[in-house]
Length: 327
Image (tube, rainbow, N blue to C red; front, side, top):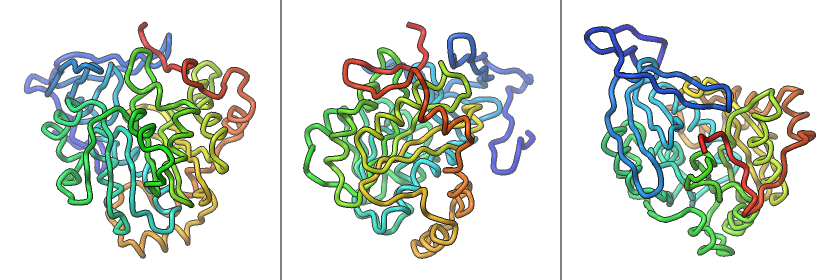
């Protein structure tokens, strides 16, 4: 086997040099991404979604939910380091963290690198996703599930935040939910009403971050990510958008921060480096002080879309924005 790049999984093929099948992930109505599947490790349909864990020829082991790749061995660390560390470092001393989604355990893995953290609650709607990832993707959580600070709550994320609304329990909330696909379990985790409940869970100076779909130059493909940004902005006093390239997704991926005070975009390399050193965080492969600043450096076209997209809007319960689906 030959390496495809530094730090990446090896190119894997069957002994006869073939793959098991081709997997097409529909991206928009007329576009998609094609992946060679070497073998299927797990496949099942839970009460909530279709679950697959496969080994891809170029990207290693991957989790697929309802036909959409959530993460892969090749670059999950890029996505999860970018999702977690900007908000965790913006907070002066995060002790209690809520993760909504994140069934692979990689989000918890990154959160638990911060020694200030005393408790992490991960709310996952689908126990089958958690069980499958624990068995077939153990390197993704890298021991996070055994950390005494970690707690798993199997319930609907929307129901959880509503039940705990106004209790000021958390310093940081991380929404690592699946895409808002029509008929899927996650679309109510992207509305203004949901973010209001999240805001009420935050202690003074708290922050929230959510994954915000892929970045596109096209109006019809950027409606979802811009709408998520505008929805968070309608709720939080400080809102920031940032992005990074994720090879498995073959796209730049967006993230949106909602903050009650700290502004991660205002931190320079010196401050980020100092905080990483103070917290003893050295085992990062993507996120650096210099990368932090670049995450928030948005090109002109994207800044213009965030402010002027003619079709994007604040998302409300009963008026969801969907990413592409077959339905």
